[in-house]
Image 1 (spheres, rainbow, N blue to C red):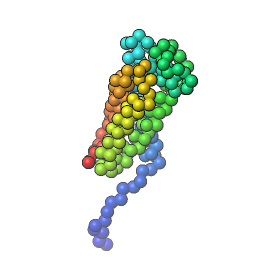
Image 2 (image 1 turned 60 degrees about the vertical axis):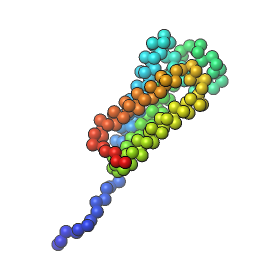
Image 3 (image 1 turned 30 degrees about the horizontal axis):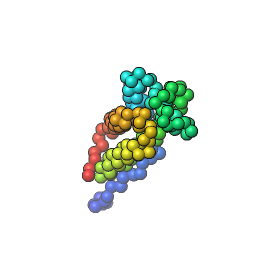
Length: 174
């Protein structure tokens, strides 16, 4: 029997175990990102002498639709609002981490997708920043927008570092 020449190698589709691992990594990365943002704003709020001010303002805007936005500077910290906002914030970051992990899993199997995934995250970050500036102007008057930008960049860096540690052999090809 002669060996077949010119045969191509077929990369198998990811198994359910691979998908579960990717989603688990994404949730962990999301929790890391959410924790970095929470710690950053806790430090910023402590430095300004108003602990838990940022999650209180964001939670008030998110959950209390009738709250007057011009009175955000005088808002008192509310543990209930802080916990609700922190929970939603963590869930959103976990979802974003899950999507990121899934996209990175695709890029790991096909390195030519890596640059597109990287570009997508840069556009997502820029889009989030612009949307926050346009749609949440009253909130940005209460919170310093540079600290929001720094928080998002720190979270993205922390999540990227975690993914890099989990996928050391990953290569990105343009």
